[in-house]
Amino acid sequence: MKKSKAGQDIAGCIPYKEECRGGFRENESRVNSLENDSRWQEEDRLLKNSLHNIGGRIEASDSLKQRIDVQIGNRSMKEECRMKHMSIKKVAVGVAAACLAVGMAAIAGNGLISIVGHGSSGSDYTKFEDLEKAEAEIGYSIDAVENFSNGFRFEGIGIIEQAAENEAGEKLGERKTADLEYTKGKDELFIYVSKPFPGESEASFNSMDWDKTLTVGDITVGYSKDTYKAVPPDYELTEEDKANMEKGHFQLAYGTDQVEISQLQCVGWVKDGIQYSMNGFDLSQSADELLNMAKEIIESGAE
Amino acid sequence: MDEKELVQRMKAKDKTAFDALYEKYKNTLLRMAYLVSGQMYDAEDIVQETFVKCFLHIGDLKKNEGFRPWLFQILYRTAYAHGRKRKREIPEEDIAIRADATDGVTCLDRIIQTETDWKVKQAVQSLDFKHRAVVVLYYFNEMPIKEIARVLGCTEGTAKSRLFAARKKLKDKLIMLEEGGIKHEEIKSRTRHSGLYSL
Image (tube, rainbow over all chains, first blue to last red; front, side, top):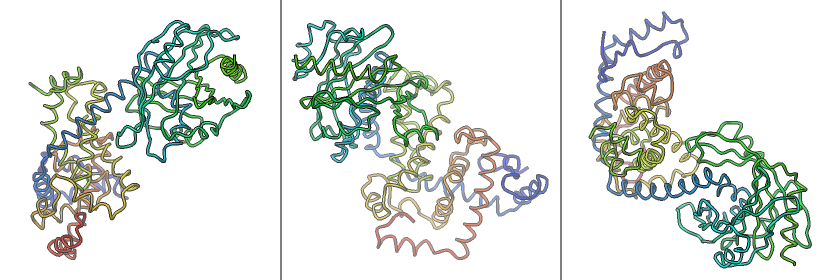
């Protein structure tokens, strides 16, 4: 039996039924006749030698390693941040992006493609009285309540530093956002408060495709409910995922160990140029109840 | 230190272990990527992304001894995705400009030194991605079918079938180039004048 240059038994390794129209036996004999053809042996040798000749003249440049190291540094930082938020706090930067996606789109023309966040895994302030300290840290005043009328209670405030980056990884702007956490039984609610990045349009936030809206004074509060799929880093999109993304109201975030599907409810509004984004996974509250909670926050600022 | 130990250390985010594995595989991967993509600048992009993914996702590798096929698998998946993306994004006229910009070995005259090599490269590049991949793994990497199937994520039967079909197509193409194709020297001459490396 003839052997290839690769040391593989060629006649034994090449199948025939997929490639030939005839029956298995007929194809087998066809292949064997090819293998016995001296031209095949010659061409096998020629292919192997030429591919080694061509490839053998190529050497990796020093700059390639430098590029790899830079990419690893950048992406390790992003991955670490994403994992920290996904695993410890459940509500991640990706969740904020769910409601702030309109902001991202608004400055997409300026080249922004991603928001990278860095924040502590726990709350920086655990007493509502420390709201002023949090405001001093982020650099602007925000509306907030200690307790909601439907029973949600204040748990803490985390400060998140965010940077907007374009495709080349260049920083387009930085900001500090406040992340307020509330709980009621098993329900956890997070309110992200942020100032827009330079060039980010407030108008686009208001024109988001909400499922329902409520007007409070001259402020429009929007509500949406999305399916949120958290997936491992090497996850490949299914056809169903792609179809759902086309339809909208479907968010995908990478960084978990396993695929987790949740319902994400989001309420958003803009007041005095500051964006508020209230989010919760698998909440037991209705759209109206969440819109009314937003109303309580807005009215707290008028007091 | 053997490869399994290096992989284990890389799982603990030991960068020096990654550097050692990079040194071991950098040229093999770059050559494979070049043979599959046909372009040096694409090959560098593919290898860069492959090593970055390797470092970030090494924890996903269950058995340390399976590092080599796992790494090749990443390379081929990356090359496939890169090829699809490049088709959509890069206009043909930009290809020559980008080829000039890379600091790797890109000049056709330096890579392809004989007419036979040129014909083989032409024939391999005329194949579709799946057939090209199996040809490179079989003839360049000299991998057995079982390992090729593992790298390409298909059954052994499919790998064999692709190899058979690829060889048949290569043979036809080589005969065509032998009997009636454009001569290598003519192409090289034309390429020098137009600045195009991609044949």
